[in-house]
Image 1 (cartoon, rainbow, N blue to C red):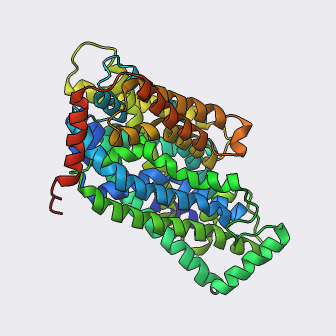
Image 2: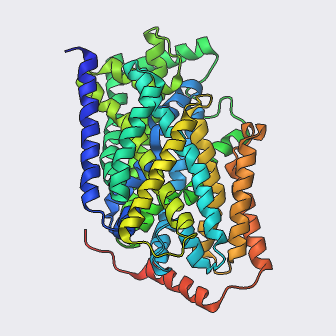
Image 3: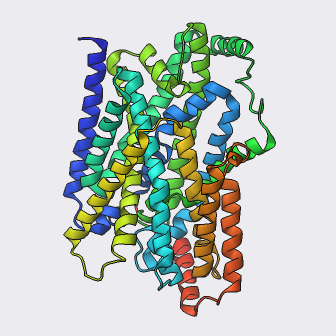
Length: 500
């Protein structure tokens, strides 16, 4: 058989396994709470690997190595900022959010938590949050579709459209039926596959080239010809550029597809174990992605190759270094990164559409089966819109991810933190801050200002300041809200950790 046939077989097997996991999850899904939150029974390792895999997406294996390949270690500041932000998120948001969402009327979505936490009877806060989820996740899911099309175009000489439809179709299938559990269980398998790939590829590449000394010489030779400095953390960077890179970490506090994993854990105390596992995974994969980009510079230069798209450097190294069967397995890691994030985002988008928008407009009580069917319909609608947007290839994966990441971080990040750590937050303060953060991030990101300073910085600061000021200018919160706040804090700190 040809090399392409072996690689194709490996990819097909991977697809079959993912669909099998989705079917198993389908058999375990009985109601909307199962479909959207897995019944709040995720062990910490599952929550950690799922959060990591759904977080990183194709950015980890395509976007980040591509950025390092093109500009050098100065782009690694994004990974540093993300790692610090993820640690803070696990440390300060995870335990309190798990306790508070269950205590506050068993909230199963971020918008419903805001409404219940702040006793917003007008429903404005929940609807606005749901609309923000749909708008920014449309761009986010589209970035995954773009990555899928790019993957198949580079690896199998198929058309971009074919790759986009294959990745979108398979991911849609197991998410549509498996729901949150399907997305989570496949995330675990995909997270482990991504970790393996990002450890193996750099090691094999260095050994194949004859050691790190040869790799370093290749990088320096490429820098001489390109007038670049790939081994410098500051070359060509401005102060605002470095701030923008590190500021990616601010986005973690407001990413619905990540913090929903905190809400689904067995208990608040599982966050400690989850943090240790999740951050270890993140450091190993981040370092592997950075090294892949650097080694790629040397490999392409030494072998006299031409690389049209820097974001395909991981794919190029994989196909050059491994037997087709192994290459197929490693390439499946790219699909794992892409599909794990798409599935998680589709679930959260569906929950916003059904739980936070559709159910708010109907007075009729829906059966559990009807709610799950609505959830699946929401997944289908969001996926189809994202595919249509992904047909336009004028922006890179990193651009699409960055725009959506900033939108969520600016809109939800300040409100999540204030909800968990400030009793005085009011519904009008939360609504004003959330809208202000989203509008500033959206308009800044669509203007030339984004080239100077990443839109999450002005968006986050604006959302935080507006939420605090408006809260102080409006009526104080009721005593029952203060009492619930104190009880949530107590539960986050005092409950015993369950047995593994």
